[in-house]
Structures are given as structure tokens and as C-alpha cells.
Image 1 (cartoon, one colour):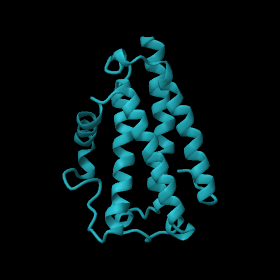
Image 2 (cartoon, helix red, strand yellow; image 1 turned 135 degrees about the horizontal axis):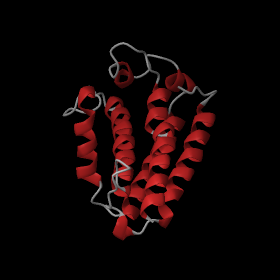
Image 3 (tube, one colour; image 1 turned 90 degrees about the vertical axis):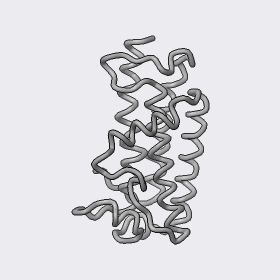
Length: 172
């Protein structure tokens, strides 16, 4: 997994990958948002719903911990071995929204993640055991907060951009 030299570098990478990812949706008409093709595992709406779902969870984990709540990751209703069901939940919850609404929600979440980062110290982002929700998320590995941010922003923006580009080649 990629490492970063500070919050500014992490934020810059999020912005770079987000900009490339979100630009892919500009050519997709609303009428095709739910169009499925065999070669790609998600429709455009499901692709965005996944991103909205994970970024929403990430923000919720932090908000809950700041309020003194015990955070169950990934959610109260889903365990880590139930990610397929969680993805179905994301689709059921968000994929019915318009592409514009999904993009707006994701943009708001990204801005909220930047604010979350701004409110945290470098140590809170990059050192282990700074958030209970991060410690409780993995049984064997120690993950710093930045790793959760990376795997819920930079990494999927990169891989899902490839998926949506393939969908566009086949469907547009």
C-alpha cells in the first residue's frame, strides 16, 4: 500500500484520483445509469453508489468515535466477511439516485474527508492506535487512519475508474 509524507500529500492524491474518476461520468447519460453489461460488474450508478457508501462509512466511523460511541466496523449490521451483502446495501441505498445526485454526494463526502483530515494531527492520521475504529477494524494487522482513507478513496477511484472506462467503451 502506498505511503504518504503528510496530510497534504494524501489530500493531493485523493484530489488527483477523484478528479480523474469523476470526470468519467460526464459523458454518461442518465438514461444509461442502470445499464448492465456482462464484462463489467457494476452499472455506473452502482459504481458511484459503492464510492458514496464507503466514504459515508468512513466519515461515520470518525463522527461516532468523536461522539464517544463504540464503532462497529464496517457497520452494526455487516461484518467484514459480509462485504458482498454490504455492497448490495450500498446499491439498494444509493444507486436509485440520479448520477448527478450521486456525484454531488460523493463530492460532499470528499470535502468532509478533507475537513476530517484538517481537524486531525499528523500523528492521528499516520501513527497506529490513534483511533479505536481503526484498531478494531482488523484482527491481525495494525492500520493507521491514512490506510483506511487511502483504501476508501485513492484505491477505488483508481480501480473503479478502469471499470467505468471499460463500461463506456462497451456501452457508449
